Length: 354
Image (cartoon, rainbow, N blue to C red; front, side):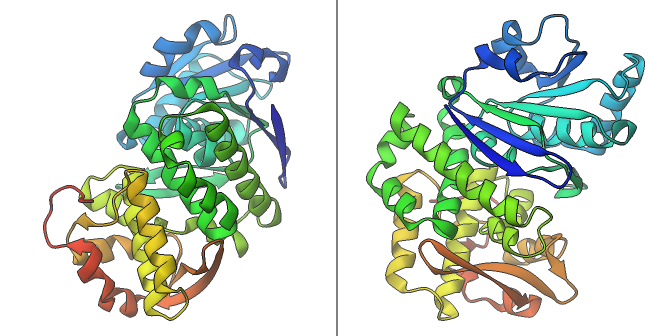
């Protein structure tokens, strides 16, 4: 087991990579615990939840990541007569962790909370770093907080129940971490793509551990995303927009977003064409798309709602080489006119393409 620390402004956060859910009780404080989860996770793991803890279930998918869901949870907590001594435990994937963290951070102006991350996406990204939030009118994470969970428990055995599509979702974030900060991790992925997809234990534990080390280091240096943390948005500016307008999953949309960002990096003279080819080759080997069928105009319109926008510019993450990224302020007009759209975004409303 690897314990990785993040030093947050309000409290430290410990990411427990490789810890067993059977040892969850070691990390829970004395006192009352309320569990927030979804129906699938509840069915699989309720016997591992803290005894006598009330269990609140939310729906699955982005449709549940809303202020309406948060309101329902607030009202349930009110009915349970929860006080500031209560600990909120989110058990699930990225949606559960985002919503549980948001509700815990805002109810009674803040309750203590922690997570058991049950998906690869949650273990390597969504539950780590203290961003908690919900969507607004379909736009990703527009309402939220920066607030660290006390712990995130990442049990590799929980990943064995995931369908392949969920494994692929998480791979997109691992590729992102490698591209922005670790050329060695990228090379490891190139060599072990098959083992990664099959959740080979030593392969997947290294991928989760290295991803958490990368993200926790960035968050520790820039918790509130005023500089370096923006690099963690690589592939997400267009990825979030595609997720909204095309029906792609988060991982698929980020895969296309990374391909598009890498192409723009080449066009701006920052990234070598050979490096771009390595990026797209790895994405395909991990069954992530590099192109999508989506209307470029609708994608750009969604980008304009992105929280990284600053007036007529947007903070956009480019690659200088594999393992090194840079944040640039790119004019919105340039994104609208980007020739890369012709290569990556195809003019139809159907789902993504490889």
